[in-house]
Image 1 (tube, rainbow, N blue to C red):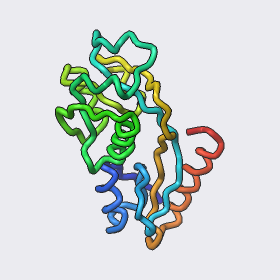
Image 2 (spheres, helix red, strand yellow):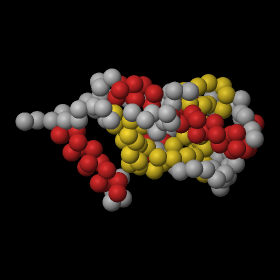
Image 3 (cartoon, one colour):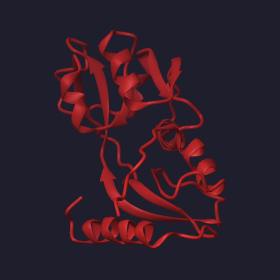
Image 4 (tube, helix red, strand yellow):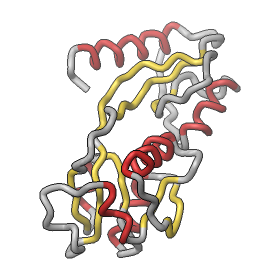
Length: 178
């Protein structure tokens, strides 16, 4: 017999709603509070960086503090994104609040807006950022580690193949292969 995967993309809140409705079996997403009906397994660590258009005044810096972003138009994740709360907490801890020019749902769209010169952003340092016309700048402020989680609905009747896939992913993470 043949196994097929159907991959979807969405905000954490959308994916978790689909998990609870049992229209999907597993989700790679951010963790959320107040979701006792779900289990979140950390499976990958992500580093957050500032992104700015090529040639931006921040581009040649070795690192940037969150407070320094206040003077630039800021592109934020929307409130449904798992990253919204973490990035907002960085600004709150720094005692600063940037002027948000737009809210974006997805990482690649955000990178496109930054590359087009609409503003700066804080985003996970993912592989395809290198293909955008922008610069990645490390963040100087201390911050919590950012993880991607494998989410599972506790009440779902997990098929053996889904359980094997979950175990495969978890074993790769524990061995440092993800």
